[in-house]
Length: 106
Image 1 (tube, rainbow, N blue to C red):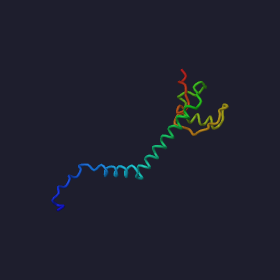
Image 2 (cartoon, rainbow, N blue to C red):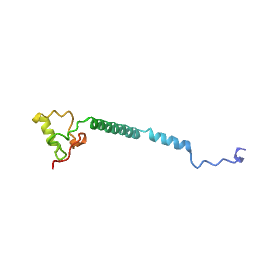
Image 3 (cartoon, one colour):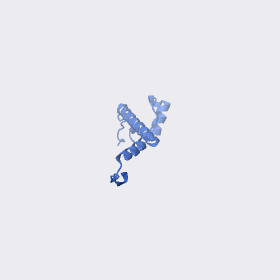
Image 4 (cartoon, one colour):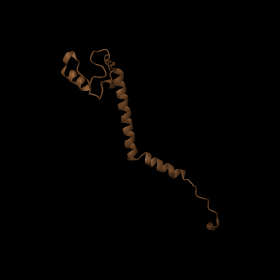
């Protein structure tokens, strides 16, 4: 008797199955690692932004223009020559990364 009843058409798209697959993908180990990496990148970017906002401007100091190589800055500040204060951070590819530097002398 039950075979005589018309069966409903299966849905073309199973929403619940799609939700389960999506949740399984988003809660998987790969996406967790990606989210942790994203949070770390954002925190580091904020840290650099705060450092750049708080760093002293060196544009008025002689010999601190944009043409000076960072290796010269590190050498001078590490040795303490010319009453240079010790550098309280790691060296970056450019001092202008955080410090505002002036244009080269004319």
